[in-house]
Image 1 (cartoon, rainbow, N blue to C red):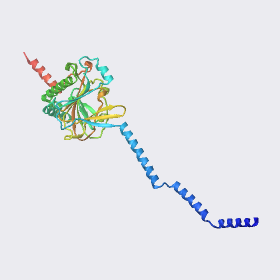
Image 2 (cartoon, rainbow, N blue to C red):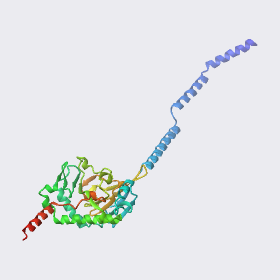
Image 3 (cartoon, rainbow, N blue to C red):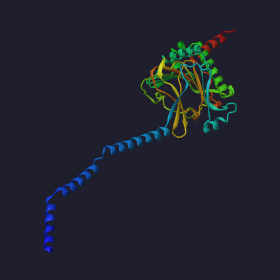
Image 4 (tube, rainbow, N blue to C red):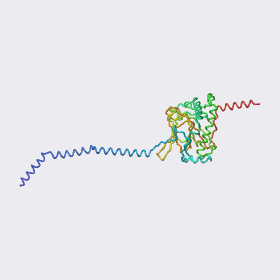
Length: 340
C-alpha cells in the first residue's frame, strides 16, 4: 500500500508541475498589483487635483485677507464739492510737536477738499502765470517747479533764479501778483476754519511752489515725484499742506491723481483718491496720518500749486517779492526824490 500511495503522489506532483496555469495566474496577479501601484487610477488623479485646487484656494484667501489694498474716491473730477472732510487721529509725533503752538493745534487731524474756495477765474489767472514762468524753463525730466518766493525755476537738470532772467519782468503782471496773494490768503483762512485754528497762527512757509508734471522720463531724483512720503518728514517746517489744482484730470492730463495711503493694521491699506480739477483745493495735516503720493502722469500736463503753512514763526516767510515789485519800488523812490 505504501508503494501505491507513494506512486500516486509522484504522478500528482508531475501533473501540477506540467500545468502552468496556477503559476501564470499568480504572476499575472502580482504584475497587475505592481502596475496599479505605479500608475494612479482616474479616481486617484481626480482626488489629487482636487487637493491641489483646494490648497491654492486656501492660499489665495489667506493672501488677499492678509495683504489687502482697497480703493476709495475722496473727490472725483465730475463732482462740485462745497466741502468734504475726513477726520483722522493725529500721529503721535505730529501731535507732540504741534501742541507747543497755541492757537495752531487742530481740533482733530484729517483732510478736506472744496471747489468753492478759489474761483475758476482766479485759477485761470494763476495758470497763465505758471505757463508764463515755465516758458522760461522746464525740467529735462517729468517734474518742473517754479517757486515765486525764492525764484527757483527748473531748467534742464538744474535750477535757475527766474528773477535774474530779463524776460520775467515782462511776464509777471500786477494782476498775477494780486491774485496770487489773494488766493493764498483765502486758502489760509480755509485751513484755519476746517481745523479750528486762529488764522494769525498760520504762517506761509517754504517750499510753496507751482508744479508742472508730465510723463517725461525722470532725469534726476527731483523728477521722481510719485514716491510715497509724509510731508512733515520731508519738510520739517510743514504743519498744514494745501494744494490748488489748475488743470483737469481726464481732460488736460491722464494719470496724476493725488493718493492718500491709509494703513489699517500691519498689512491692510486703503488708497483714497482725489481727482484734480481746476480751482479745487485740498488741505490736510502734514503728519504721518496723511501719507500720500501723486500717481505718475501718463499724458498731457498737470499744473498745481503747493501752498504750505507752519505754526512756527521761525520758519515763516513773507509773500513773494516779484521782480515787478523791485521796479515799482525803484519808480516810487525816483518819484519821492523828485518831490520838492
